Length: 310
Ligand code: CP
Image (cartoon, rainbow, N blue to C red):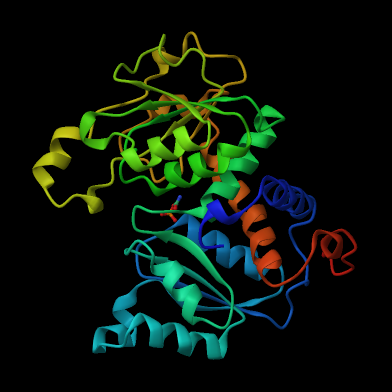
């Protein structure tokens, strides 16, 4: 699970079905005897904790680090050697790294499965699985939806991954970003090549978003800017206010990979449109499915599993 681009429509729907099984029964011993390593070279709250919760709730044990400063990387050990060492101890590695392509590189040198938990501004495929699961749960389908992506579309790995996955589902995308953070040409070409419709907007108001099924908000990521003056210029570019939801479709849902900084007014949290906290909760079930799938456990194994803890 290094990039979502490698996965067919059938595989994505299969993983959603597996996540549904785990939502029915999240506590099991199906991974008893397994060791899951979580290597986080960048900060994380949700991704690391939900992967570790998923492993723990399925009976696996967890090793790893949340801060590379405590590792021998500080003494000069290379990523390759770190991955080779951890492969001696664990059955699967979940890894977040600040360099684009780091997870792909790790997967080429590691003898065990690698899950990309985010590599720079590139991809975040496990986030995409929980996004797909959240969209499917709330809309009842992944097909023919209007998805509005707002904010940092340049560095936002979650929007890049989601866009890639939605090529299977006849999506119409609407991109709302300041010029400095516009969707990169590469991804617009990807849309053109894969027959994905997209419309770019500058306005962010009630009329612009009235047709949205999913409003996918993102944070402007300070850590990706080399010029902090530029960050200051764009950091508050798009704030979703409650009064902008007056024309929203009744079943429209607001997603956000989180953390939020200044993109969504807190008063929206109590409206039926807000789904970002449930979205993060869905990460537990989809990550249970991902770990199992990477370790060769099938949907049939999960359906017939006798290790459920009620
Ligand atoms: N969505 C997400 O990746 O959150 P964290 O950075 O807290 O893991």
